Figure 1 (tube, rainbow, N blue to C red):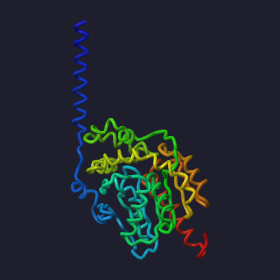
Figure 2 (figure 1 turned 60 degrees about the vertical axis):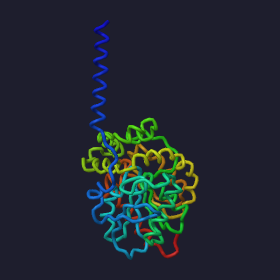
Figure 3 (figure 1 turned 180 degrees about the vertical axis):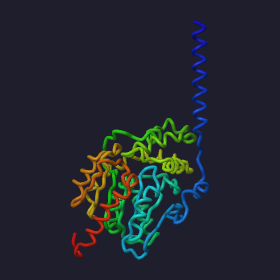
Figure 4 (figure 1 turned 60 degrees about the horizontal axis):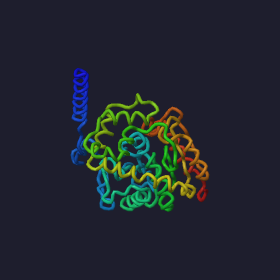
Amino acid sequence: MVKVFKGLSALLVLGLLLAGAGVALSWAPDRPVESLTARWAPAPSTFIDVEGLKVHLRDEGPRDDPEPIVLLHGTSASLHTWDGWAEQLKGEHRVIRVDLPAFGLTGPNAERNYSLPRYSQFVAALLDVLKVQRAILVGNSLGGAIAWKTAVDFPERVSRLVLIDAGGYPSEATEVPIGFRLAANPDLAPLMNRVLPRSTVEASVRSVYGHPDKVTPELVDRYYELTLRAGNRQALRDRFAQMSTISGLSRQIKRVTQPTLILWGGQDRLIPPSVAQQFVNDIEGSQIVTFDDLGHVPHEEDPARTVGPFKIFLKSLSSRPEGAG
């Protein structure tokens, strides 16, 4: 019996040592934004003041474009998720992309309010600062929810709408990224403020791709390092605590009147493709294109293929007679 107790004690000590080693290897305190800008904010990145918040922005393409394209990323992403689309579009269009409050190099806002109405106000304020009267809003996931909410709240500022695997309706995910599950657990907050295994970030990114083999070490670096931006992890928890405000506003989607294109990944396990049909049903005259093999971030996973229907959408609308719906 003594030998049994000694064996159990040894296993317990070993377990504690291994756990301690794991924490030590994953120790990742917040990083000041200044330490991240050299890698993640080279030209043409700039920082502008929007409602007292220093916002990371890229504004490319012809300045005389009467209706710039504004690209809004999803939860825990950044303006870099649109690199492929921006490269394809900036030759003919003014393309504006931004790190939304709570994410990327922009980081948290002072009031810790990440509700859809607040984000909608932010987009309108951003357009004011940039002196943009009307824009084409394109959004993925959370960014999609912000896009349609802005179109509802400020219809005069939004000429057209593109929703890519957008949030908005209550739905059941078949797979939630492990990073999101950890961030949504308030009991883990003290630990998650200081610990972030890179493997957790990698697994989370791979889970939202239809082809996980496309996830490169450089891509994981980007998501990992920008998550460590001071305040972002707390902001992510704050946003998850405010998630109910999104589904509670879904009845407003029927008020969208702008021409709308819906793009969706057929392998999206976070917001299932069935949600795309809800948008089609609620937004009169909307068009839908699905990509059977792509996941929750199809614009990032395969930018060349997914930007194609968007270009067609732009040309089809611009060729309409003036005054056509």
